[in-house]
Length: 68
Image 1 (cartoon, rainbow, N blue to C red):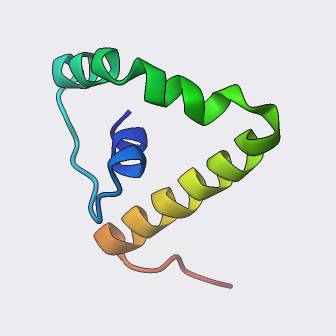
Image 2 (image 1 turned 90 degrees about the horizontal axis):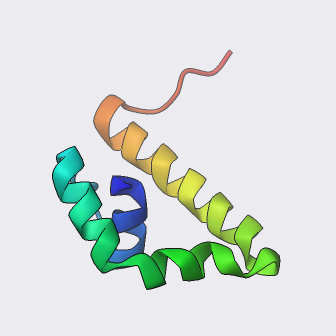
């Protein structure tokens, strides 16, 4: 949920919330969350953007992935 929050709010860095705070945030933003995945044509793009954001977060935290 923290990744979706970061994406929707356009934050540079991810902020991990407690489970309780994530639930509260999600309840207050159900409409926005539903819109992300409501359009089948746009869902692939949203999922790809979330993967890119997740990778960027990981690289900030641990550095680039090793390559063979």
